[in-house]
Length: 388
Image 1 (tube, rainbow, N blue to C red):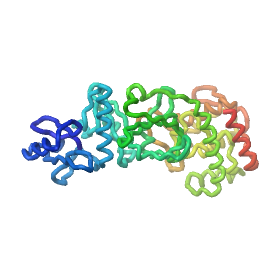
Image 2: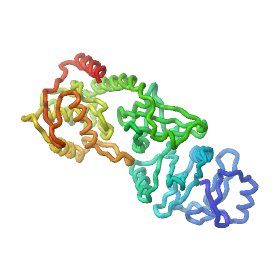
Image 3: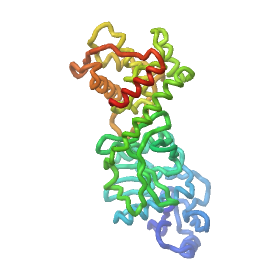
Image 4: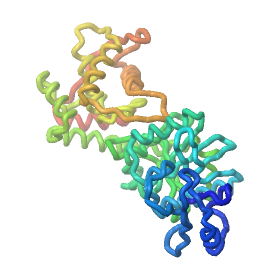
């Protein structure tokens, strides 16, 4: 940790105090943990970032995970960056009511900033976000750049917890922020489109901390010309889905393969209208080609042209309970898988397959076309991609 109590005053390791000054304070025995009031020792070595450490190994309620040198460097770097922006950040400010200690707290904005380097579960992430929300504190997660893997043009491997912390920009696109203290650089991921459980298409922007103003950039919408490249990525992904469906043995794939098989359909030859990035599709962790194909299959099997959205929702809820369908958790986004489902219905409406009659009622306009061969499927995917 970077903060301690000395004579009932907060002191920190981000300032200009010398090693000799910390040694003198330590000899007086007056350096204490602000949370548990135990004595702490100033660590002022040559290799690691200067910090305070507890004398004993007793658990302290204010700390949830061991700190790496990378994490401490990041906190110091972010602190200096905010100071340069004329902000007044407080390092490791302890919020006793919720027993949480954000890495940086901006009291003027009532805003907590977490620099996340260690592993954290999605349940822990949601719990911490809800803790801040219970005190009407805004919060943001900035992730250590080590957590992000760049796989090529517009392709990234994003950890599931990182993606859960995503917010929407002014155009409704997902975004995340990363920071590297070793390079003192921010990497902004914009227009994030998940392609699989970990793989996502995203546009990345690099900024030196000297050229990045968080409060101006946080929800700004960036140039979307790169979306042309997304079409090629998505087309390749649909090809992958088609070529791997027959050998994929996951419970979700096996279930939908079985349903289609007994209705004389092949999952490999799913309709070109399925497997598309419709509005909010990412609320399902299950691949869109699976749940969208099943939704089309449900509409296709209707004996009448009119159908209620409740009919689809009830079936999807059944599949969710059986864990055949999986969803993603986005604590910052006030939406659910039902928004994904409605987004796809509106997508089908734009392509003249269905039309909305009332808020809860839709009408089927025409039959869905299934490719008869893999070659036809690839050709239709390409044609559909160019039209979209």
